[in-house]
Length: 365
Image 1 (cartoon, rainbow, N blue to C red):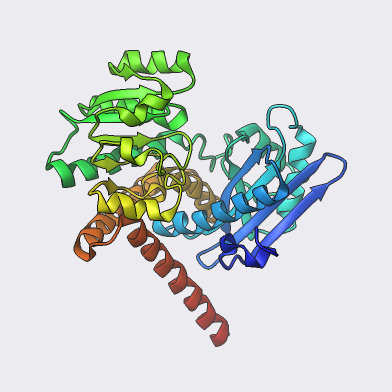
Image 2: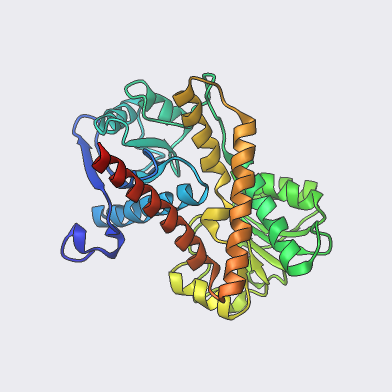
């Protein structure tokens, strides 16, 4: 981690990093607020059995900065933040633990809104909601946005069509093979959409019962988890763990494009450069999978306006995100630069513009 928090490359000019602790419930957590330039920081809460607090800190910092970029590229009036709770989500959860977490979030006074992430459910967030208004992703109430997975899947599907138009000059996926890795919440919805658009699917997942069920209805071929990288496919769709694009897998992939829902697909940024040099079109993950956070943002929007969840608002933002993806692919081709660098540049420009505008307003006041 370097000598101190500020020496870590992942620190990346965070506005605030808060260690939270509650002796009675055993809560040990970290809330990271990367940027509030575009609005309150919004990002999920992950409960994970980290090997060390240094590992938890590294994870929360990377995820928090990632949320700033994801929210900016989706053109949402939100900044980026993230929180982690150190512990085993299967054995160490309690309602009291999430109420203690809610109280910790509340001390930030709305600078950060928490939502679900790995190891944390809607029910857990509902416990936190009992003690703070600063949580999102609820199932009840007029503004509740519910499960974001279908909207995430729709965004990944539209991104796949965008890439197919660019590479194969076709409006559907007929004749194209997609290697789909992970058919959990998002992957299952995505499989149905890809199948309906004419794609041939080859899929894998560790949950064999679910895999058989989804494969049966989408006429898909099933392969073992490690074999997915060797499948002769046109598009590789990582929808499970992050960092599956790494030095070990790169030579095994034959796909011409990567379009998937997983977060942090590139093990390191130079993998994006390597894909570019090999002529593989990488649709940047946080652009492709932005549908989920758009859905969550609709809840915040409804709450701020006193309205209800609005599917039309979600659709408008999703369409705008697809325009941004088109812009990224256009610019990457014109500037001969990797797509992930272009996406980062667009996000940074939007964050910096908002920060400068805020500074001007403070000066004027």
